[in-house]
Length: 287
Length: 338
Image 1 (cartoon, each protein chain N blue to C red):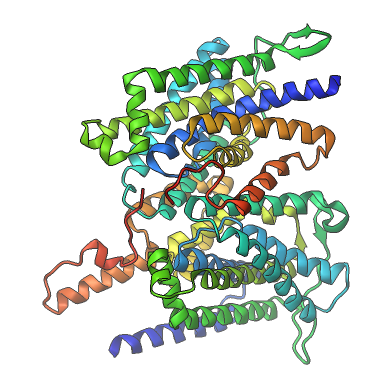
Image 2 (image 1 turned 90 degrees about the horizontal axis):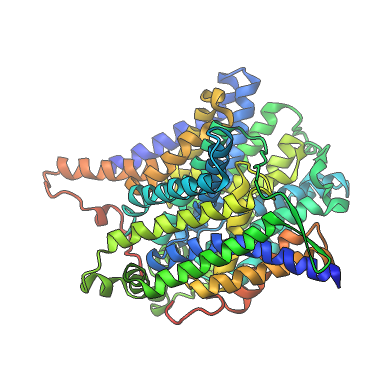
């Protein structure tokens, strides 16, 4: 029983990280209908920027995360302006390939600047806390609470603010949004900014319990894709639900099935889902 | 007429050059690099057939490359089978797996297909990596024999191996040529341009897509099998996503959906990488942006750009001043839906 609860807690932790990454991915898919394979590279850049801010410039953890969110958000905007904007009218295969090009570049860039070796990120929250006889580390609690707070904020932003509703309007009907006077170009840039920021936050929160290295985004982004297909491409609640489903199935699968094959669970899940329903779970009409 | 003659002369000259290459250069290293790039080309043709002609971007091809390589490796090392028996058998294994993956994955479209195949590729990689008792896991498979003698022909020397690989490459190019210039090839392009339209005019899209998918996995498998017997050692890394990205780079730079694209792209990038050896792992600092810029400005790569430049020049020579619009130069360019 104790192991079970511990594993649920672990599932909640990794699920939170996956969800943050998947949210950024799903927002971008929602408004532009592109699969941003470079999103994993943004996650990786987020980890490195925070690490660099902390170790090189001696910033506090939270300040470093803030800088990282801004920097990676701007990289996201830059990416949109330079690459995805000119490809608006191209067939979908082109922006996938362009995104792969960016991914390869950013990974090589990280390796060039920061080296290929694994680095650990220091955290001011290394303490261990005991709750009901179970041990938790502060950092893990922080990941869960941080992610939930951000999700609530994002939800409020999208539903209650004017700028937020322009994003939703655009994801529902681009032409229509344009007609009622929404500056779609600005909305797209803003979405990329948020998307990059979420990736940076996810990486900065999870880096202390994982490690920072150039390929750190690869597996996470693959799983984020699984999540957004699970939750319906472009759907925000779907991404949250999908993220936690995947987090729980992985941590429970690792204990009760096989630790070796835990990474495969997500992909088998996806292969089964797409085999049964080729347009993804919870997809709404259209193609 | 003069143009066809021209093309024929160029092709014959290229084949002659390829045949004479071992005599032109006495450098074993160059021969090694050339053989390796021929092997890549075969795999890139596989990707080209699927992505370039039917518009389905498969990211599982490194997986099929690895399946071909491991099938051959396991059959020759563990089952001690003769190379000439193991090679067709490993192609059959790849095709069977390709068939089952294709029949399910091809029901998905666009992004879903790319992501689906990405996951399939990753599953294949993980299985190879974790299934220690069969594949030797991370240690890799050592001691894959060179192709056995075929009558009087022996393949122990570097030159002989080079010719063997060249033979298979020419075979693949010939098959590609026949496909592209046949009715089936036209149907594939129709599917790429608009699947619904192709279905309306009576093309059985699923049957065509599946044929292309299986054939393209067989090319990838052949490339893998040749790689295994040439390098003599394989590890799970050959199934990693990085390999499929390499293939894509070669294809995109050469020209996706063109017949000579895979050759041009692979040769240029492989030899450029040799020149940029000092960059080692950082070559993607250059190739990544090149890939992206190319997709934006020259979606059909070097070959496509050269072709449209040629067309433009001819139009000019013919006194036809009307500039070729983008859509004419790229008939397959379609407006993104949604």
